[in-house]
Length: 238
Image (tube, rainbow, N blue to C red):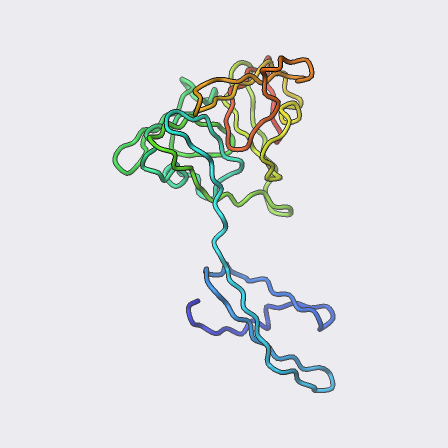
């Protein structure tokens, strides 16, 4: 994209001199690249010059739906930049709250001050759910790299306390929804509550849905947040 030609032969690997692999040593700039090569075999036969083009694009951002008014939402994974004003870029968002029992007073808050959200809540992560008050339906869009195998990080674990918890819907698979009993496996929980921002109504999620009322929901949904009441401290392993 910068109009620079580079020799990358030394950065390519092969075990049979037939298939060659290239993994950039540094991140490539966005844009179109052209790979040009000529191959010569052991008998000194040379191929014609060939070229292929590849375009490096920005990773699609994760979108969390927002309705005018109060929304109870979460991120399905850790954002690349967790600063609150990097995650929440819409100036129509006026207030963001989260409840963290480990924090004195429990509540962390950020309110709109001009172009920025300011307050005791300075970061957005995948370990909490958030109340977001917005004037319109602009979604929250942020870069979530996801969890990769073989990298120096462990899968997420969400700490639960006895009593009320504001929990996120975290997924390693990219699933849109999944069974609440599976998600909360190992946690001694009584009830979870979800919030329908459009209808401004609550819905109950109960353990062992087979015996729960027909009015209850069954699934945890990516992008949403939930109030969860637990009888004892525990850990959610998404």
